Image (cartoon, rainbow, N blue to C red; front, side, top):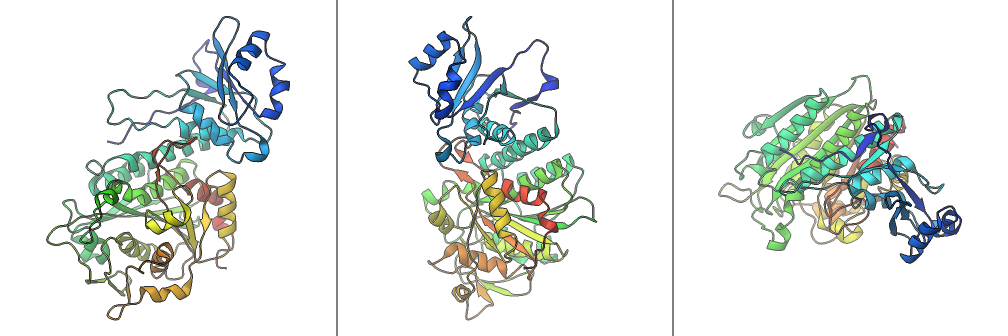
Length: 474
């Protein structure tokens, strides 16, 4: 059972009779004096005593003449220094007491839709294992076209975070498979799977090899949804439910967060949920390559040669480079249905974190055309991604004298060589790869510490804007 994340929203039409929501006004320092002139003398003194001037991160619950809080002020700092103003509302979503709130005055450059998303993302709590459950404050949404997307975006983010935050003891291959079943059921999608020894019969040898040592069988899970006449999109997720590193075992510190190594599958399910919830005109094909990379007598070893669904061979240089192996078979399967575009998400390399840190996932693409618009939508949605090259000369780092290629490129350009490895399996289909961390190491506005989602909103808004109908062959 997943964490039961409570909704942080209520529609205006569903407000209980007689309830007057507390208003939230968002202010910049340059607007404070003019705004303050409209407050009562007592409120001005109250704000002055507490030093509120609209600076970034300042917040103030302002009482009325009877002492009741009817107004909340949030400072967002000067416009020229602020590029995440909407996400600041997440601070309130996670800090205000339970009540009904409504967004009032906001700066002219601020999007109310995106601010509501920030609120919802900040209200998230993972309390599955706590005796005291959280009950978030409720933001009132107008019953218009925006509310469906706002609520779907926040719910998809919560799904991604819930899956990643759940410990491996409760989120093994069977549980992750069940999460996919539950999602498919919610949207009347078709779901199928290949499990255990059937992976060998159905020609998924790398998925089988990585997961055969675990007590729960590896599997490939597929979800199909949408009108067959719409452009076909394949979304592929790495679902390593725990990564010991295999025979090349991780250190204690390296293993500590490996419950999150199925974060790619969590991202794939979250994007699929968002597409289905908003009924985008997409023929969706979601593929999850699920396994636990464990150690036992039948674990695969360094030096082994694995066959692949593609028909090439892979020499195992390092058993801790397992995510690219399961993705290789899943990517090959995805190409067989002739998608217009393929996207994969994976918690793939530490090298990506060294290069860009935890909050900015590198994006690799074998086509030029989608790079700029996906990046642009990411910035607009405050969900940034960063393009990195598939530098073809570095393919030499993956060469093997006894197999088609090896699964690790050594100490240099690790995120790039991982992307080049995956590129071998996409058969020249237009394809994008995200090497995501899937984790927020320190709390920040709209992003509590723990499992987190990166790049999904950027991709969704590109799809919504008709990205699959653009020229993708260049």
